[in-house]
Length: 404
Image (cartoon, rainbow, N blue to C red):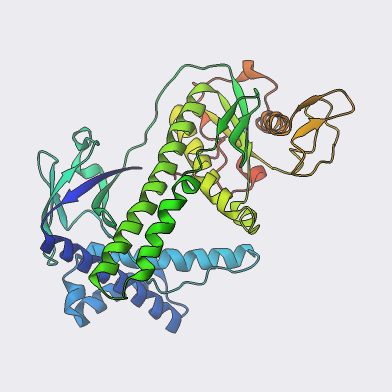
């Protein structure tokens, strides 16, 4: 499934109609959650039927396309199913009990309620919300795909405008030559990552660099009177600052992940639990600014696209073990050089990266780069998805990783 995003342009009345459609989608989702709370045995089909009941009771709900109402009910069921699944698995801590949504920024249409122009530069929404025809601008070309391949169309509201997302049912794959190279990656705060060859990539620290501007924008918001137009404008400026940093992180993660995957036949990295790491309040901001999880997601995605092997290994003792003799050498976070009795002296992160690579090779059953072949069909099937147990994931090469 590919997701193409293009910016939509229209009149002010059309933008207000989009906001009304988003509010209606939020109302339907929250109503479905309330029905489930009142009747705990409510299933997915019951929520779908309840959409028709809401449409008959509320005229503004009837104005939204029927499939868009069903998509909102599916969002509600997704949160309910996740709660049930966490309970069955015995997840420690909070199970994610479904909550009412306060801030909703998108509405999703399925195969009806919209019509794409022949030149693929305009889209018309045909429901009773009055959105009408919107002009599309972007770098993605929709001419390569048939209309029937577009399974979902989303209207997304951001601080800098309205965007249209097209979910296209197509599997992306590209064939590239084998490089006969393997690599282990050890992510960090001082450096974005250090690989098993001793090469480092600097941490861009987008949040730290833009923090001065963010603080100034936040102070301007605080000084304005609540509910005034000046406060609304100041909030919009602040939102654009945050959006810029978010896009910088994504752009950096995408480009770096693509480069790493194309240059190596096997990529091994740590199976980190970011949710647990950010509990350290001294390092939480720096960890979130590094966006390790986003980098990992894109590495796994490009691994499936280019047919590369991506393996997430347990992170325990990767920094303590010696990559030469495998003896445990205790060291604190302030100790940045690994020194072992066997005579191995190297940077702490490089030593960890070598241990990660060794574990990755042993997990997939390879002893060297000569056994790797990028043309093998199982290259993307051994990828370890984020949050999945490593042993369960690589136990069989016939088990394919779920799509992102």
